[in-house]
Amino acid sequence: MKKIDRREFIKAGAAGTLAVAVGSNILTSCAHEAAGIKPSVLGAGMGGYFEKNFGMDSGVLRSAIRQGMSKGGDFCEIFLQHRVRDYIGYEDGQVNRAYADIDLGAGVRVLKGEQTGYAYTEELTPKSLKRAAETAAAIASGTPGNFTGSFKGEKIPDMYERKRVWIHVAPDRKIAIARKVGDKMPSLDKAIIKSSVWFGDEDEVMAVANSDGLFVEDTRPMTFIYATCVAERNGRRETNWHSRSQRKGPGYYHPDSFLEKIAKQAVRKTMLLFDAVEPPAGEMPVVLAPGTSGILLHEAMGHGFEADFNRKKTSIYSTMMGKKIAPPFVTIVDTALVPGARGSINVDDEGTPGQRTVLVENGKLVSYMHDRISAGYFKVKRTGNGRRESFRYIPIPRMRITTMESGPDDPEEIVKSVKKGIYAENFSNGQVTIGAGDYSFYVKVGYMIENGKITAPIKDVNLVGNGPDTLSKVVMVGNDEKIEEGGGTCGKEGQGVPVGFGLPTVKVSSITVGGVKS
Image 1 (spheres, rainbow, N blue to C red):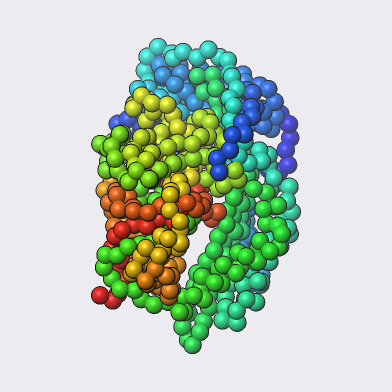
Image 2: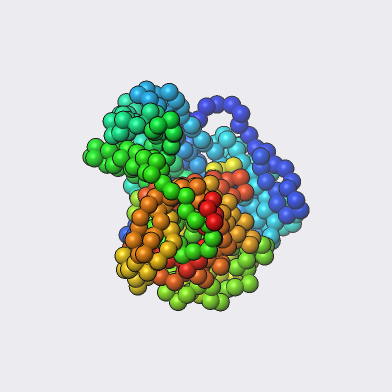
């Protein structure tokens, strides 16, 4: 096995496999558009990353899969992962936090009907991998399952630079990025009394080998920067933030004017709060800004389209397939194919190529987001939404980049059509009941709309509503679809994965605005 730099390797010890029973049907361990397609690494044993660096060749993977199928499993899958992450905290002119996080391991999943056996190991050796497969195999009891013993490659999209780009960047270059943003914020307004920047980067390599004979490998870079500041005026303090995240290398942060823009946006959002007014409460039209307000679509509607909730009949959309749920000018997609975007993936964590999935087409619900298990249940093709936080977790249906596509309306005309309402730009502190689709979101950045014009900024306001109801009340959709470059990390069943969202300018005829004035 080839030696690798100590920094690239995970610390020794604390390795092994664990498995516990959870419920009666799962055995688990301690889980724009582009047409560019190119072949993945063609197969295990052909010089892939995990073979070169950890000895995970085709023979090792075949042996582990056979072990996983030995008790009668219908399917066995191995997920390999090596991820190196760096974090830097820069506050008030100095670095006050810095650390690295290194993850290395493999998860083995065995399926038997609707049952799942899962185990993982933090030690990539033939012995530990086989032991994990043996543990996962215990879910089944019967004649060994079929596995041909050969692997084939897969064609996957090419949405980002498929190599480790951050491991070669020196810490001082990363600190310089954080410093330029952190030092810029106080210089923009004398009211800024505190500034901080949280910078991170990662290089992840993953691979999937399974009993269908698939082997696919992908390298996923990522970076984020989160700038926040506190301002004080006449004894009153306000705070706000601005963030950016992409699957790109250090070139993403050049030229310096890009970093200055991040600082300026954080300061702008903070300072406007001093002039903000408290809007009236009640039902009124709401115009959702392009891009950032797509978080409302993600939370209030997107989760309801994930297939596991519909398989279990806990989503309000479980009985609506093929039915009209929105006006005919509304089309909603979940896509992995936005070049360089935080939520893009060339291949999901089950080995299914990234793709564009239309969920709502011309107002009609036409698809859920599927992983292997839900696709088998509904007897449809997988959509590439099988995702997991790391090798320690099983894959489940998750969003990638969820957006509403552009509609027929001019954004300026949308605003002009509102006599009295609000324009919502940024949200925070959202709460959603996935089954019913009820939501409440705090508007962090927003404005009044009065007589067709955007006027005073607003504060202390929540939007309260129901996802399906809000979707049915969409009356205008702008021609300015935008994918938010900040993105976020979506939590579900204890797992967090990077996602993106987007929206054109959208007018909803009526949402409950929870202000303090009646």
